[in-house]
Image (cartoon, rainbow, N blue to C red; front, side, top):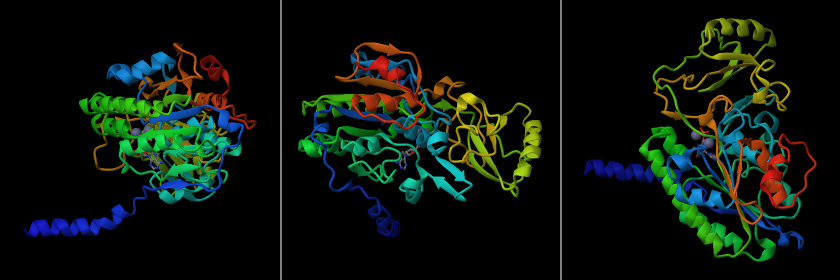
Length: 420
Ligand code: AMP
Ligand code: ZN
Ligand code: ZN
């Protein structure tokens, strides 16, 4: 009895924390499609977090396999380095590499601002000044074409002073059915208010594979559930009769890491001289005084002895697009420590989770992501070779007839290959 009372008291005390979850739809006022834009088709870009390039086959996702046959399937899609959620979701909607758009990792340090960005910090997630580039929804809204986001990294912040017309604060409390209903409701709005670009994000597969590993039955189950949900979503949308193009992507893959033999912070790192950010497969060291970079770099090279790679911002391999030249916001560390799969740096006493991602995608195939697309704008029965996720921007822009003149890292080659 006493236990029950304590339990109820605990629940009551916890109630304010639940009440803080904001599940309301946010609507930007006074937005309308221009008359010309009302004629445009629709795009639903779905991201299943951590949906590895081979999951549909490995776990026999029957619906996805059907959908990709109707349109385009890439052998895989290469995430940008580091293969983490925030940098890659934002790359997908800006066409820029992480160092170029500024969201270089889920957590990072900005030496000019003297601030740490964290994907867990709502204030920073919603602060537009962290985000570079021109997200697809900003491009759309600038052209008086409405957009909606049922979650996407960056959509909660006024990037270039612009959010999607309809958006949500990220939370995992709204049931899938309710989210599908909202998408259908959006597509049933009067033409002037109807969004043509919808982003839709699903976290479950990534969660399962972190916790149980990419080969676990729980991950298989999660892929199967996602596959069933996609059928629900597309069937509900089909009822509207609108010309909808689907792009199904993920941000990265997943690999089983070595949980037992993790790497500690190297002794050569003097934390009085360097600010340490990151962990796992990428550790970034920011020198408080630039004169400490060279000697520490040399010491680290010696200490590493091949157990991990040591780079400076000047000699990090070009293909990672993470060096001085790409680092537009000066957020990349002065020294970078990179592990090879399946090794990770780990600085806490708790055992790391079995599944992880973040490695160089050109070296670790398990990091590869998924790209399938189908709908009236896509060619049918096309299989492409692997391509970089900086190419997605041009595909969406062309589908919606949106022009842009700012520089991005992607070009139009894949768009040309896959669109009618
Ligand atoms: P990771 O797999 O470590 O790269 O981190 C992915 C996590 O980001 C997932 O657990 C998601 O729940 C979370 N996430 C995705 N989008 C958002 C968002 N807009 N705001 C906050 N967290 C997010
Ligand atoms: Zn992710
Ligand atoms: Zn993840």
